[in-house]
Length: 69
Image (cartoon, rainbow, N blue to C red; front, top):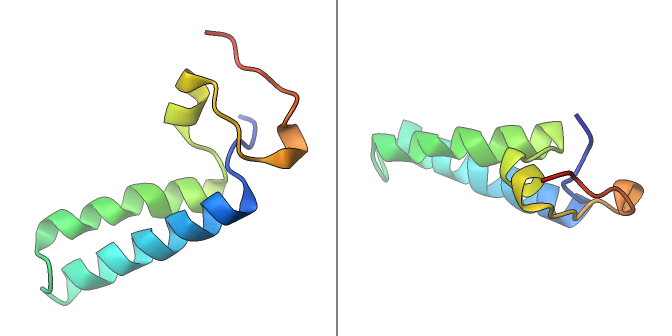
């Protein structure tokens, strides 16, 4: 598993994920907000399976790596 999520992308994912989870936990937006676990995990792991499928790379460390389709 290679990193494919860059620093800015990672920060945005973590902030959005935490916001959704906190909003769901406080009954502000309902239980669907727990979907925030997905952007939170992809931000923490620095890897997004959808990026891998689409060949997207926002991480400059592995910029030259292209995924096989």
